[in-house]
Image (cartoon, rainbow, N blue to C red; front, top):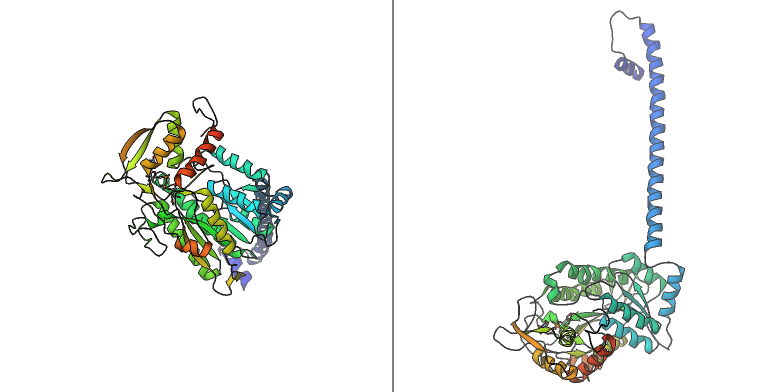
Length: 435
Ligand SMILES: O=C(O)[C@H]1O[C@H](OP(=O)(O)OP(=O)(O)OC[C@H]2O[C@@H](n3ccc(=O)[nH]c3=O)[C@H](O)[C@@H]2O)[C@H](O)[C@@H](O)[C@H]1O
């Protein structure tokens, strides 16, 4: 019956033809057709096989090109990571420091290493400011046995590899897009590092076995338009003045989620305008020093009502003590296999200096140490994210971390200027390193 249908379809009934011939012809045609269907089938198989081999070749090319071009991976690399992570004291900790070639990251890594903890750094060496300064910090760390991986916190494969290689007990997360006013120019970089990068890192931490405890850098800028002084952790933080502040505030909410669902132990540190040797060239105290020495004018912002702006400038060594104390008092994360077994620690602390200084006062101190008069342009604060003042209440950090800042701006800037002159040389016009 089936054959009949096929026959009829292939040979529409034509009056005058002999039936038997039709049947034979149809059968020949059918076999020819069957043969051509099998051929088609074989061709299709061949095509599928070719596609499969092409795809696996592509993936081989991808993998090997990543192997040959990526700045991480391989046996030698793993050996460096393990050596850097080796703990050399009783009850020492193994810490992954993100942003290790940054200002705070370098100092914290050195402090941990000096007391015998295992430290592995991670930094993407971006060009937000002169990467040669970051490379110099990396070299400084290498001299103390700290290896810094060149990679991004958005690279989930790299993070997974790091946690596979070392059972980190802690993550000191300092990698971020910093700077309050730069967010006007490059908003996407804040979302990339401070939001997407943070989530990628937390995902890796949540999946790691053991899960590390996380201490990370939030910011005084989360207080935004808060005018209740001094700023306490319980004050409002829902009125940020810049995208930078908003991404740091988002970080506080995001880390809370990972604490709540996965049992990650989280400590957020709100840093107040940190300064000191090996600092960030984009910050006022640093760029003012450079300009004053080069005889260039500096722009000093003032409030709309003519008042001076003020910051609770905090010296790097005090911040490092706060970071280390936060690591030492961090309880272990409570999750395993991505499941929380019991509630985990969630903390937020101000790390400031408790004595705000105005920007013109900062300039006067620099003039004294540099022995050069600054050429000042007093300008009304542009509406690009700045806040008029910051002032930290540090009672909580003092009570729970034993945090007690000991360096005032005078003493701290003296150390900064000494470092600056030794690093860049006395006369910028006479040459020296790039900035
Ligand atoms: O605590 C924080 O969480 C932040 O601290 C820092 O931000 P800020 O307190 O804004 O520091 P910084 O830029 O040095 O400006 C200092 C003062 O100089 C004024 N300022 C600045 C530049 C200038 O050209 N002129 C000027 O008057 C300016 O108006 C301000 O009054 C970090 O950069 C930031 O990453 C974040 O960590």
